[in-house]
Image (cartoon, rainbow, N blue to C red):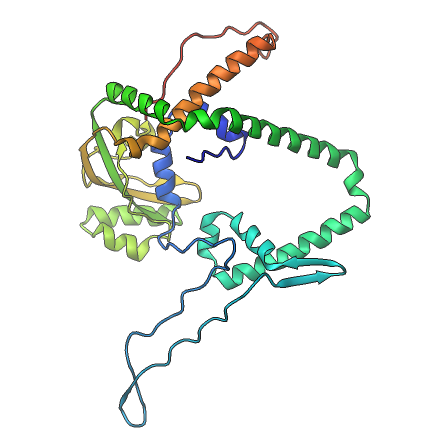
Length: 335
């Protein structure tokens, strides 16, 4: 299993308490409803051609005629040049690589042709500005070289952790041992599935809550009033990990319960409904495998830090300069 550490903050996340509930809510609030195919490194993303399902009627004769099919897109072969600046060539695959680095939601929400044109322009702008900065000698300035050194340190930090911890976090024997520990420590309880209606303003959200109290169907309001990021979650999350402030938004945590007031997340106001409730049960090995890997990573990171602190004889102090008192207690996040 390929385990990737994107940046130092990823490691810090694994050291913190369990975020399963928060992650579930975040996914629910941020995923768009429409899914599109991922852009291939070698193939430009295509827009689905609109197909007419019904037959058109000839206005003169009244006879039904077969509609013409939309023209097929021209197949792009090889890796054509997009820009030539003197002896420099910028090719299509460079633009596609930039698109691959964009957030998935942005790629999904932007038509493929438009996105390529935007990134094509961005590529040219970036190249020309960088060349002009070099011409002005900015690549030799102290501030620039300091930033480069910091970037080198970060890459070295990440690469070392990947080399040291990735094999341990993906070790099959260690994962199965961790799974057996999970089964022993598993505690039964209730878990819920939720749906959301996202709205632009608090007033709109309160109007939806009022309409629901009068018997309006949740699904219809979600479709008619909700923003694109409204979502029907297919994932169950434990009630025990439900944040207290969110729990207080409900009169009771039960099936079909709706928040009595809007829940503000990011720039939207959400009305949340508990669509199902069931007794929790242990996940299968494959279901909890990613979480097991994170727990192993956290444990191995703790061991590595203890080893390095002893090796380099680290002395710890508080902000006021007094010696730091290290607590022996260690909280183990649940899966």
